[in-house]
Image 1: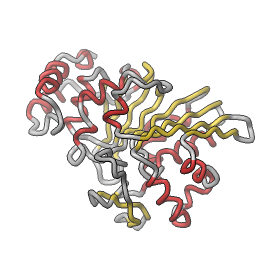
Image 2 (image 1 turned 135 degrees about the horizontal axis):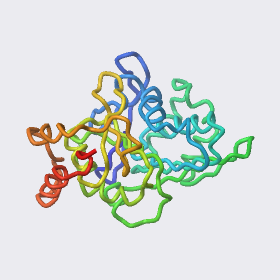
Image 3 (image 1 turned 90 degrees about the horizontal axis):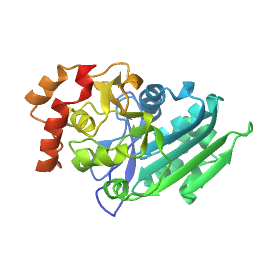
Length: 282
């Protein structure tokens, strides 16, 4: 996870999860990354299994939104390494800077999951774009997009359209500006019709904003002690467990319907679009 609050970037210190797994704490907010099950374990269960990337073929583009200390990036590389049906994997990572990767490299002996990626990690720190050809001639490409994601995603820049979006910023409570209706409207312009959006958050305001932005929304797997994660896609058949029509009542009763950064105009749009979403007719 990562934040895009200011130009000073992110600083991390090494800590341990409740189960004793090493991870990192973000100094400015005191939030622990993947604080229950560990960074790689959560990336594997939430994003690799949740995206079904091990069963995809051909070329695949993954948005690593909130790169942090690289758990999603490395987990996706490992999935590509295993799944020989993928001819090319492109990972586009978004963050303020690469301080998380630097912290990971400094403590690499504590994170054995980076072993297959260890020769690429210094390259990722040094460069903003790398292309690596495996022994079987399949291609791994990494692109780093630096900056405030709120500005980045609304800048109309050109990126390859995403098949998978791993949305792993800090929580909508502490970083509400990263979970708004407008963010998801802009993000939707960069996804394919068959894309899968995944986030650990189960917040009502997040699911409502995704619905309002035109995504279909469903339940994903639980990670650690957390509630079910959230899956979304422009097309409903991608999702196995869609939110039921009764969820509209939960939204109406909720005391946290909207991100704290939501505008009044956006709130009105969200209420209308949630109420009339075609998902409820399926």
